Image (cartoon, rainbow, N blue to C red; front, side):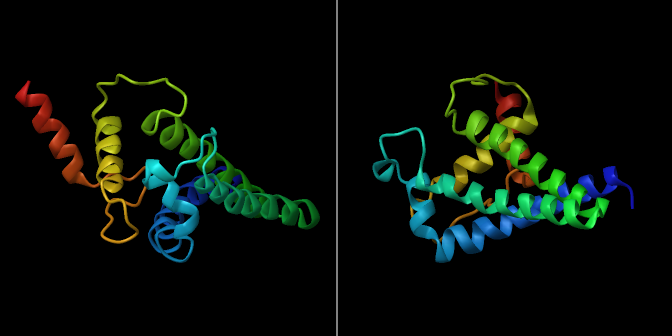
Length: 156
């Protein structure tokens, strides 16, 4: 398998891993670390949230893959490490910069995919508790949010 294919496969698998981690770990056993992300009253008065600690877990996975590659010289592990790292970078840009506006950029867009992605995430955040959530993924957007954005676009 080529390096590029391994990177691409890992990137796409990471969306499923992130979905499962979000639904079952962040909204489960480690809700105490994720809760401040849903409830503004619990957010610390700093740039960082407890929720940011989940980046450490994915960083450890990438670093472990790079380490195995460096000792084993198997390009599969290099591709996995790069795929996880690229997904993490995209996640940061989409989730933290675009959706949550932790840095005030990309406020106005007319892109239907990005609007649907933002709508799906807002629907996820309408639930302040750990139960009854929806739309746990990041880059894959359920069709109903595209449909809602299209209806809004046609209404104006």
